[in-house]
Image: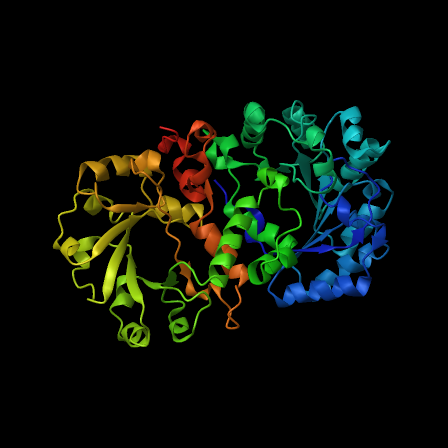
Length: 509
């Protein structure tokens, strides 16, 4: 398994609001007015990206290669210190003699070509542009022959493209492609206007999609799933997209998400299309959190070694509970001093077996004990006098990465069987669906890290994205669809599923 390449710090910059295609699936069509972004404005954005630590520039549009200063902009990214410069293109300009060579000479490292179908008729039905198939393929072939330029391919999943998907990947590989980004459509722009043509029954085509990824795996090609719902990959969970990609998605619409987070302004797209949107659950989470702060009903605040100094501040939403993360921090005189300034309920989040923690301070009202490899055996046979002192709760934590989940977690289905047979029948369980717990509801651990706020008391969007990915980014199986609790059950954290598979979780029982 691989984490998504969004671990590279990619900074997307628009060069144009014009395109020489007219794609039926274009998510950006509402932004197209036939203009070019001012070169100085583009360079200012690129400089701002470097100042924020981004080292991979992605030049997009519209069609970026149409910009009259395209080569100069590429060259400037190198002078600014970007380690990698990439463009996303329909490829038609690259079909002209010398264009690809000039781009490489200017410093272009990678070109991603939108080549959605091997059938000229289907290709041009999608682009609605006669001749676009021949030019795009010619441009790709020219670029693929150049040393120093990595070429990759975007393929959008639609009813037209799925039937020939594996064969088209095979053909493109023979022409020099070895990396493929296979995308699910987004309900914006033309794609939403033509949703009946663009979207399709995903569950009926899941087998064909998995087959294409398995083909790439067998041939040694890189194949990235991009926005494809995780349920498609039941039984092939290694292809599920990493949650890390969410950072790229949020950055692309940063102003919109900032407005939702700190001004309560709803995205203009909210409504019917949310059911098809790849970030709808993130929007819902951010909306609930922003509203909780505004109404002073904020969830618990999680204090860790990395943000302990924030206890000296006042937080928006007036949290009623502080959760202290880690036993060492809990015993710290520094923490006691800071807590003495507040009249607030104190809970603890611990990740070690109970026998190591008989000295939990008296001011702690409840303890959340992580379900993990270190605690699993102890939790399954609870007989500790610890239980007489404080309220004990258990929680399956989300993990920031696949590797962390595989290293720390235990398969939750097997654990729950042992836990419920042992002493855990009456203990509250968080982040585990009711089909595994047998409880009447699913409790969610909602404590947010203290550093999710800026010093200005605004929500720090970057920190919130990280918190969401690590804690609440959950998925459900296709089998869940028939469950009566489907609508109000978030499922299991995505990295737990990536590590142990959907089969570990008997959804829908």
